[in-house]
Length: 102
Image (cartoon, rainbow, N blue to C red; front, side, top):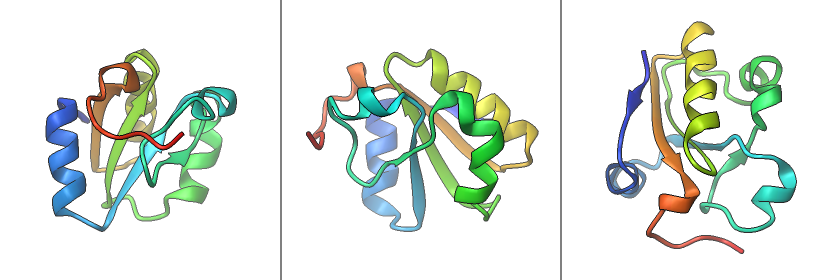
């Protein structure tokens, strides 16, 4: 079962742990508008088929976001069903108060 955390909590995890994966589940053209540094793009409609190829360690800490928080919640549910153990939904980039890569 994934946990929902705030952007501030997500940033703290990013700052304190180098061995994490940040997943952006938006579409490629949305990512071009700005994204969180180090994020891996896995659009929501490909999560089920692609995530196991891109993230092989199901115990790794995974932080997931989208634009507003709807798609990230769905993606986290999919990852839960695939056996990922440490999945955190931190909502949408529209609520991200920190730096973005443009």
